[in-house]
Amino acid sequence: MDRTDLPGVVAAHIAAVNAFDLDGIAATFHDDAVVNDVHREFAGTASIREWIAHEIVGDRVTMDVIDVRHHHGQVIVSARYDGEYDKTNLPAELVLTNYFSVEDGKITTLIVVRNTPAPY
Image 1 (tube, rainbow, N blue to C red):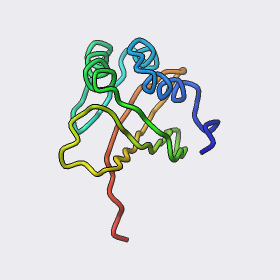
Image 2: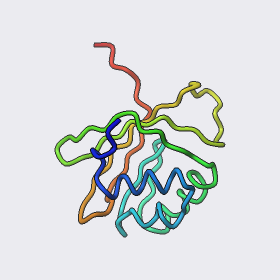
Image 3: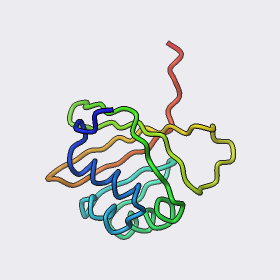
Image 4: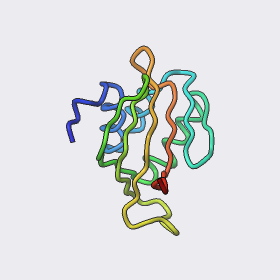
């Protein structure tokens, strides 16, 4: 995987996630950013920071990037996830797709989805 396909802030975000760096992850988001993770929305600095503290850093989540695509201004990153979160009913290899929107060098929107292959 050519990590040079990752814009600076997305690369910094993933590096901070893998380092369990709460402040580093939070710094990648715009003040009025929105995150949607597991069908839950976190909006604004305080809410996103709590999500990071509990569900990323607290659960020792790591991301291993396997694919990067650019689509109409979005950066779409597929990554293998691991960590100390509840893995009940999850596959042995959890791959999530991260849809990043970036503006002025900060993440404005992050949507995390567990996709399934289309039947056609």
